[in-house]
Length: 202
Image (tube, rainbow, N blue to C red; front, side, top):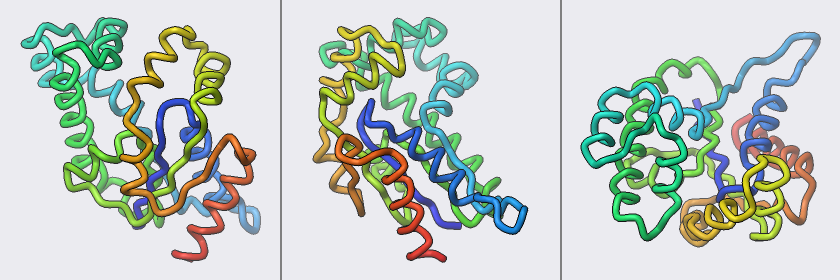
């Protein structure tokens, strides 16, 4: 199984691209779906962990965070001045990567596992490795427009999310190929990624 990461900052469109790449790799051939690829959505896993991981919920409570209050948790995560930010992030990341370690064996029969992952630096810090990393990037203005118009996030809060994202240069340390989603149509990027994967791995 090849582990393929599609990563980038908030609002670059990586999730849309990741799901379309998966569907493209699983295209119907001779009337049958190839089913050679599946996806791990790290944002969904993080939400699942904060809702269901009892150890994580208890650890967050011990530092004064009620994980059932999504607004409170989000405000802490995206506030660089909040003294609980780094501790909360570390606890959540530990839970997410523990979940990945436990469940990744369930996908061993697939040829490709797409990781829709915003946490690429944290993943490498914890020893997770990828066969190929595709970085999606775009300007702050385009990211803002996407967050406000597609995800219906308040503009002020969207700006806070952008301002407190991991620096692009941190992602670039780990990326193999970069795509600017402001310069190219989504389908062009999807087609290029699929072509590159097939070229490298058949």
